[in-house]
Length: 337
Length: 89
Image (cartoon, rainbow over all chains, first blue to last red; front, side, top):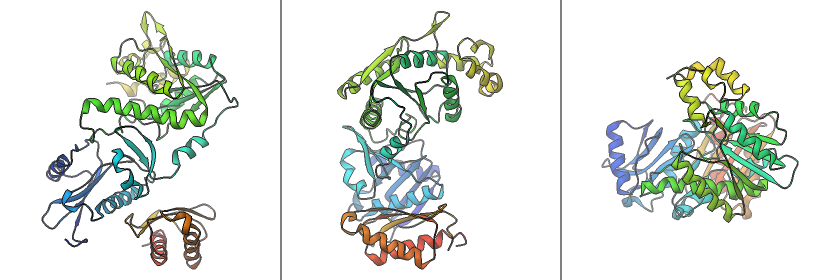
């Protein structure tokens, strides 16, 4: 087979017929097609069979595979190059990929650098030391010890969040607040960040950080290469916690992480338990803070959203700080369902 | 030559280089990644600077991801990326 005898097939995403063909191809490699894929490129041989494939979702390369008939032809760098070119055309320069740890060498050869790895997953980026430069660029505050952190979504910022931040801030010299970037949240990342910033502006030792590519949202996290899908959630959360420990906590001297207790949600509860195990192995203390209640019920952002769905903005008044309410009065109607 | 848009040239395949050019406010900025960075990093940078000078480029951000390309390949990839970044090609 002549090296150049491949046809490049693009799709944004592929049409159903081609997609079915790709799904069958991926299944042979023990991979599943990721529903969130936005762009795909295939190298197709003279007989119409897929030889290699690579896809893109936001800034993450996904579903990269080469047919076993064409191993050793150098097709993977070729197909990855095509997808990077496509990403460049869309203005995306900083790319990530999740893969099995055994593929480390292959992607290193293509200019990807490891961020963190667990038993099942390796996360890489195409910018050497990108995560360290990012963390270096964050404001650090003045204190060198007794530094705490909270990672939260704040969809939107409620009195419950406010209480958690207040209580945590009283227990450390500097408190770093990371607001997650999750495309799928009802409140856009920029709005959530602004509301948090306004909502804690009066607490002097709190530093709010803009969302980043490195605090991975579960929306982007791929599960297509993990055989047992029930394990995927676990694997995701361990990776996320390791990034926090190995990069954020290490560089910012964070020794405490605060979380709200989780009385109702089993999934979050399991996550908090996992957090204690992982973080303690890095010498970071996890401090659970009792949820604040209003009218006998724990305040949660989902309750606030339920009121907004019904367009009952008044009802949220006692659940959110004045800064958030001010926004809801003006824009709350947007969240009606 | 004025760099007005992002452009790329080359591939990530072995013995090639992947070059990305972007507009820059002031001056030349080169980011080099190479499998032979310690041995030939300075030589590669010098070659890139030469190509930039030949084309009279004064403001640009150039990132070169070298996969062990020989000198003429690197020069050709940089030149192509520059020409694509001019805007009218």
